[in-house]
Amino acid sequence: ETGVTQSPTHLIKTRGQQVTLRCSSQSGHNTVSWYQQALGQGPQFIFQYYREEENGRGNFPPRFSGLQFPNYSSELNVNALELDDSALYLCASSLSQGEETQYFGPGTRLLVL
Amino acid sequence: DAKTTQPNSMESNEEEPVHLPCNHSTISGTDYIHWYRQLPSQGPEYVIHGLTSNVNNRMASLAIAEDRKSSTLILHRATLRDAAVYYCILGRDTGRRALTFGSGTRLQVQP
Image (cartoon, rainbow over all chains, first blue to last red; front, top):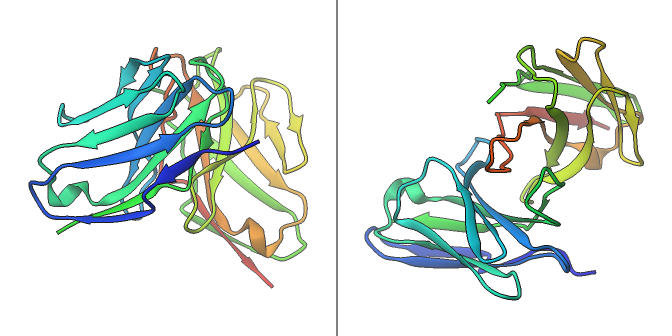
């Protein structure tokens, strides 16, 4: 059974650019959540996708957007990057949209200069 | 969302038991108590969860106070690999099904 994978592992961008991060969910999981983890802090919920529809959103601006595909893989897009967007971006998949255990990927480390 | 309070850091010796406390005095009757941990340079991983009764699995035990206002994660024999940040999270049905992480407890294990 393949776990959650994310790509790329590291990324460097400059302020104002756009970035796309990718996540492949664990086999059989139809729900994907994205989290942002700043250095030294706990992960913060960005949004969740269930069967290709956004199913809840945290306190993040609209320049953070996402997609989920029919195979349940997902993308996180961030437009107009700001220096504070530098963080570890984590993807987690779960079996359903309920209070199920979430399985996290290793994350993508984004640095905005 | 109900909040949890954990110590910032704890230390343990290898092969000794570790008790990681969590206070959640505003927990509601339907909140599950989840524990995740995050090893260095990795994403969080599920450890254990429970509602009212104590729970055991291959990784740890979860002891829940009778009034549910606190809980304790028990690692029976700490190993160096258990050095991580441990997060205590309440699973409230907000409609978002998101995990609300706090700052967690950084556990150091000494050889």
